[in-house]
Length: 339
Ligand SMILES: [Mn+2]
Image 1 (cartoon, rainbow, N blue to C red):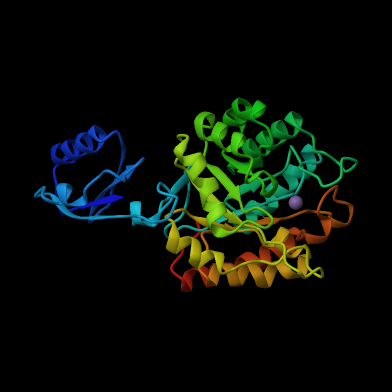
Image 2 (cartoon, rainbow, N blue to C red):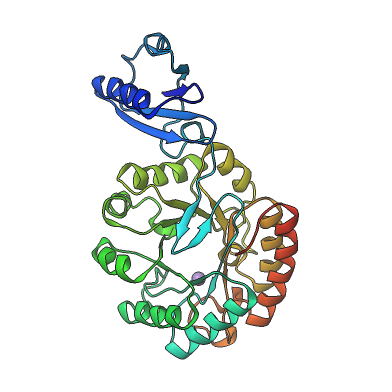
């Protein structure tokens, strides 16, 4: 249930209402926009009588929210959330451009790709140090050493770092070294991990959509993180499993308007894992920006033929540079800026 307040309500009046909500044994979540202030009531609202709240002169109206997610719900927070990743803004009219190799392979490799990505216009560097691989015999990533290599690349280029966390055991290390913590598709419903990153992770979270997750399941996973104490969640569509086997997955671009309608969270698109083929990345990336996404996460590798992971879907730096030129023009048309 949410309480929509009248314009120009004082802090003191908001506090009075928060106390009233808390007196029902509920949690109050205040969202102050430029126009209106909303108080979300979280908990068992069955015994709350909306009329009792509407008698207050500062209350405009009280609404029931039927969706099971509250904190991520756009009704609770009508304006777009803008999430700060080490100074790079994601959401609203900002476009995040995340690039880098699937796996960190060596210091020379990561620094070379980071410099090329930055020169092309990327504003964040991604690299996998801990890799969730389908086969236990495949390369599992460099782990902690990989994170240190990413840090060296950050020192060299200034690009904030995005990397995937697979186990709660490493949260403190990620807090220290990583700027945007990715929770991968396979862990989207690892609820214990979601609760731990909500509680202990001090950095924003990039939550990938599960391989066959519905929108509601995906948003509920974001809700887990938010309800556990970390409000800074960015969603990432990376293709879903369909009957089609020609492409690795099927990119669901409808996710962009749907997520924006249902939530206030930014949504970025990963066309690399969606298609699984490098030549699909460019058209899908352009379509995603045209559809209003808040960012792109693209695999870039200097030598895709010899990459230890996901070579066939990686772009060479020259192709990425060419792509970002076109993305810049489309972004301009849809009112997004790249910084
Ligand atoms: Mn990959």
